[in-house]
Image 1 (tube, helix red, strand yellow):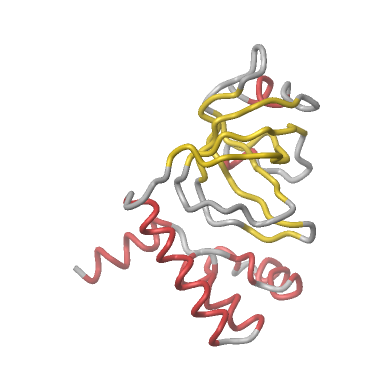
Image 2: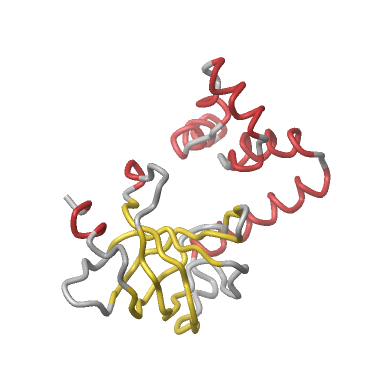
Amino acid sequence: FILAPSVSLAGQEGNALLQINNLPRETNNGYYYIVDAKRIDINNAPQDIKVKLYSNEKLDVDYCDTISANVRFFNIKENNYCDGIFIGGAVGDYTVVDKADGSPKAIILNFRQYIKDSVNESFDNDIAGLSLALLTGDVSGLSFEAYNNFKICGFLHFVAVSGFHLSCVCFGLF
């Protein structure tokens, strides 16, 4: 169980080798990324953990790139335990140490970003958010009101497409 070692990082700062794992998500104060911490240079720090990495500005990185960064770790308020994320971090200075050009995961994530950009340009607010939720499983584009309405009605799980749903559709098509 990795919770206790991960949260023991809270309040500490050090260099870390991190792999960008997902599309950046915008927050009120900037952006956050889900990253795999491949190495954390702090005494007795757990290794190979997921971190919710916050930044005031969008990082100049591509999906699956590996960066070396100074990170200040802190406890996260949201419950991300089901995703295996027990600690957050604020990124300071960073450098890209390995570009992941052409990796299958990077290609898929770039295509997902292309879909997101196209839908956001073509539709307004909740229509774009609902379209993205149905196409990519990303519910972050739904307004708070729409998200809560789907949740109250019990239909939120229909909106957030999972890999299982896509596998069933692909299996049915082919």
